[in-house]
Length: 307
Image (cartoon, rainbow, N blue to C red; front, side, top):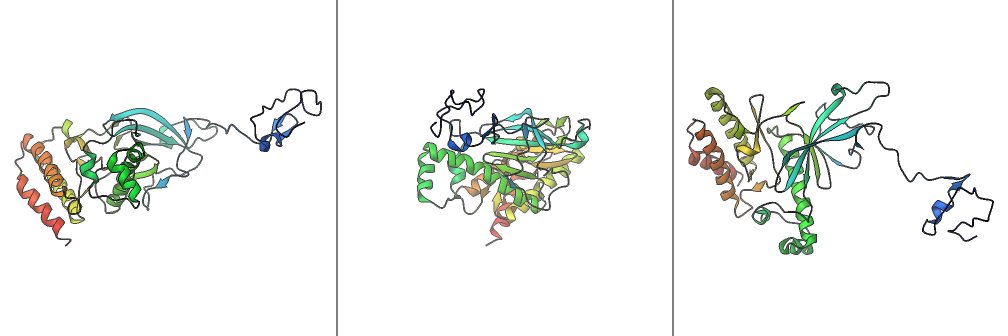
């Protein structure tokens, strides 16, 4: 009998065992009493859709919030799309640790937002060339591929968006900025804190009509956050009432893949000016008159103070 085949006339093997020519020697050597010694179909989780992807992922900054589940026995379940955008879709993912004999209840689960950036076969982030001006990669081959928008280059850009947002959220969380906590990243999937209640996501600022007193407080929250960002030389780059959530009277700034170096990017001041315009126009439309030029000057001065 050859190394990789089974002769049906050889009665030393169980008749129910059938090996094809394509199976490797490591498998044929593992056959004992009609069974394979290697499990080629790992067990699925007892609940949920997949085992937790925590193992093997890159994790968010420490100390982690107490609600983050790091147990390798946890399972994940995709509850559907929360938001569909040009560069990514955001899903709601539920993660919990199954306990034998215990009823599945939400007090054992956490909810996260899973941002999944589109691959190279789908539309890339809008205006990506302008945002990428201040970024560099180590290899000139990669720079050329990104500039020419080859398939390889588009895949690199897609990965850059995911890791740019993950890294930005990690740094911003560490300095107590009002952003979601970045739980982990695997490839182009970013898992982060779900902002809202268990049964409903927090609304975008554009969808709300705060009372006048709260409106004043919200603008001061915005001014403080943008100043702290500018002191470190950054602008959001795509800030608008649609990229800000309102949860329990607090502003939470989201969507950070295009974070811009105000000084390092030649278009940095332009992006900052647009952020100011978008936000000031919304507050003015709600009845709070704010000075866009004053805010922009304040933020540029904060950014230049680093020099």
